[in-house]
Image (cartoon, rainbow, N blue to C red; front, side, top):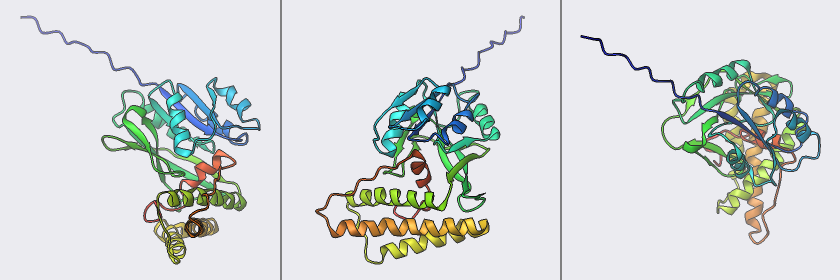
Amino acid sequence: MREPCAIAYPDPPMPRLSACIICLDEEAKIEDCLRSLEGVVDEIVVVDSGSRDRTLEIARRYTPRVIHQDWLGMGAQKAFAYAQASHDWILNLDCDERLTPELAESIRSAMEREPEHAAYELPRKTWYVDRWLEHCWYPEWRARLFDRRRCEVRGEDPHEYVHALSGPTGRLSGDLLHYSFDSLSDHLRTIDVYTTVAARGLHERGRRAGILTPWTRGAWTFLRVLLVKRACLDGFAGWTAAMLSGVHSYLKYAKLRFLQAAPGAPAPRAKPTASRDLAAGERLEERGPVGR
């Protein structure tokens, strides 16, 4: 009797991957970001909201998919970028982020076959003024690799995030390097932009702040970052980051107090002067009981 023949089924095709980046006046940082994507993605989509420097010239060296879109807000601008991609699997980076070789290899391995999860979180490591923060903001797990068919953008400006609609989110190894703040002035400027946007969002949703709210929120955020997140182990940079995280929380609720004191006045509008402001603001406060 003849043995039955085994039927060899072909492996499913490797899903193709689009990188999506939003930008505004990022000539100093966008090239390193784009270079780190070489050999990892099948397509790069850059959505620019009106750069006046060399950002567009640099971007066009790496991709023909450079698209203009006036600023829509953090979540809406990123959702617009995702919709322009030719492929359903998306890798979202900010201009001040770069893939390490280890992370690039993890992404390639995950994409060798149909990925197990709808979204993957990447561990982000932040450079703060003059050193890497090893504790305070590390690892910041961010869902940046995802299938747009099975995920959606959630959150309120300026704190958008990708949410997987079904199943758990996976995690990849290798750091996503984040060159956030070049100076304290840069951090303070970002805090001013983000607290204005966040206070306006709270005001529009009917949230209110008591007279003690700015103080209690600010103090809690400072202590949480300093002790729970162990910023105290990151030296002077960690203490500074923790203190300014508390200042961020304080100012957000202080600005909300001023808005609710004059309910008939229009809420202030604020647009970041560069997309790095958007990236940096994602974690100026701890996620948790700090107005999220």
